[in-house]
Length: 199
Image 1: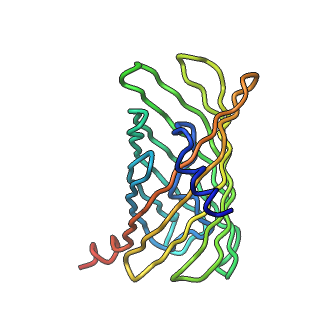
Image 2: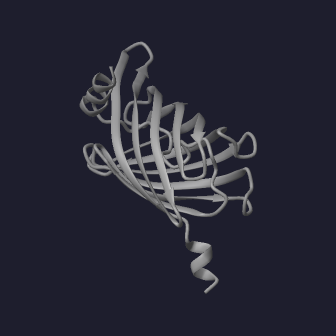
């Protein structure tokens, strides 16, 4: 069953209308996090910053290049953690994205939202998530509804962290059916900004 899910993720067509990678975690880290990732469909970088050190709310921003679609994307989100850190910690996100397709002179935009659950401790977590949204490209003026399930494994060692992420689902096209979507990605995070600036 797991192998079938991985094959479906990797073989599905690529996606534009999706929520962020960086906020698809149940636990908001207490300090500023920079992250870069490379996946089967996209590459990108971004940051997540809490409102204050140890706060349970923050902001994120991502710049993404979808190389299979030759599309540039900017994502922004607000994230809220539901409780203090424990073995099972949840969060919610709400944000929006802007897509630019240079070759087609097309632009798309729309909101997205997500719910996430982190299982684990300060060093290792398994994160589960669900994302939804609405997106419209000006060339079509028809909405797409991206529906995603996510699972990721995250390991933090000091000021660095690595992650393995899988995301799969469908884009619902009202009145036209749906299209399967999926991606696998590896990420590298750095938490040393505050420490570096204090030297």
